[in-house]
Length: 497
Image 1 (cartoon, one colour):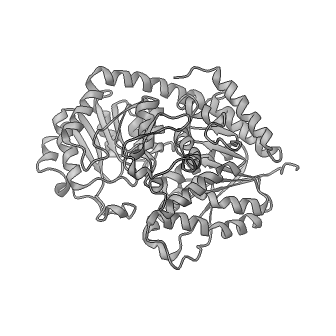
Image 2 (cartoon, rainbow, N blue to C red):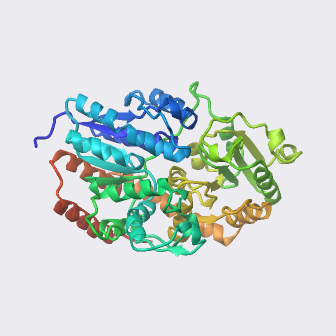
């Protein structure tokens, strides 16, 4: 097949800021390499208005901020009887979006490839019907991908449900033992429809021509090696794996050019003196938990910058928009007055990338969303891990037990993390030897992230290999094996951690 002189790459993302941001960054990278790019965005069915109500403004903001990237809104599918489970609604919506995606692919003069989010596995059918090679872009960690790819084999060779195993360790190739209770809720119960759907998705990933991962080899050398050696999928070849990260948003400033007030506040603080707390775009804790955090911060005596969001009225609907928080109602009486010289509380949002890169930031209390992890690692900021949902608990295991870039907030899997635990861990990372070891480790992570993205770095070379694959016809299974073997040999010559 002769390469098209103006190849179009179609990126197909699910709705959710944590998935759209890295997809936009991938689009920018493709544009810089001279390819035409369009992001095909699903339009939610009218029957799922609640679940997707916050998605349209996110897409609009991203489109406005990135005028060089084309966004194509696929027509909404019919979904007259939505599943009562919100997550299953999202999976169903992505499956029902396959016909509109196929129509869109067929309407284009030529398509070099379609790159799919891992929630868009059903779109493999659209790519196959259109005769277009399909790749996956995994926007979480290589370690999580290694576990997910092994899950179909694990379920086929074991009995019982993960939900009944408590904290019993699960052993997957390339990752530290993961407590069963730290696996995503979507795979805890074999009888659950969502579990069956996700296992089917993981089993289809090897159909892709390649897998892009938003990570870098130094950070996850063990997991990447297991993927490339085929250890995660024992019964069929693993597609070529390309670690192309860390791909992150560069940060946001106000439209009028003014800096966020919290950055000016940070300017006045000593170097590495501030603990930054932020739980992501969907993160939420209860009013009771907010008060425990406040007590812990105050008692620690350390400076802090804390992003507070209103707790959801229904914890099961944490994805719905929320009003601006009333700090007087949510935080302990007198807290703001007592801590005015040591801390700053901002409502709903802060420019996280800029905060983490600021010299005054010394630690990061994070929900362990992978975008946040990459931003902290690239800024050299130690993490206090407080996972909440999705694969965040798995990322916590990788950060604490694997790459050793963070400490865990004990109690994250209970009703409350106590104020005493917040105080203890803040002081541990800010005052004691354990914190110094983390900072030294993060300094290396920061250096290696920059090195990976530089010309000749591992991520830059991997992306070049991906582009070569786009230009040279269909990839055979033999080529996939050869690519992974060559990458294994190259990575084995580098320092591991």
